[in-house]
Image: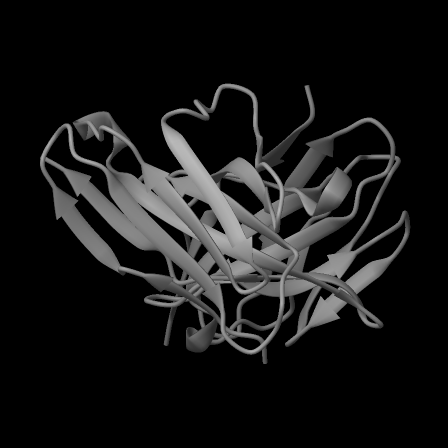
Length: 111
Length: 117
């Protein structure tokens, strides 16, 4: 059935390193895709989204491009900061606003 | 920004009791709210869609008689875990959907930690 497969963590990087968190999806049709972030002790927040093929979502230096050929929506950031340490979720949208989450990837950035 | 609250933030109960969790949209109205369950180090699992003034829609495999959802107003949805057992221990998260000129956005509550002894 429809699902979201996300790179397993945890991911540990030094500050200013390049980040990629892989995400692929299976779905009928072309769902909206999202990245949500959960900072320590806080609720989930929308980081970025893309609603159709070839769209690029971006926010706070993070980017992800909706690739229908590879059914992927990989999250990237050119230079991570300590404050980016959080759990990142790749999410697939569905009808009536329902969201289906990947397993989450814990990112830890060291100074 | 839009704020969603949950109450309580944590609860411990004995096996066999029922527990009610509230989800409130504090500064906006939400015709649709969603309930999720998150196990340790695992993803959020969508449990059900809560629609104001109508019955909730449950995802496959979720027991509707076990997890009672009520959405009596545009700012409040409740999840009642009936006859709770230790396997119901989990982190329950709600979200509220806002549809407007900037598109479709969901705002998440901080979650409720349920521990059933």
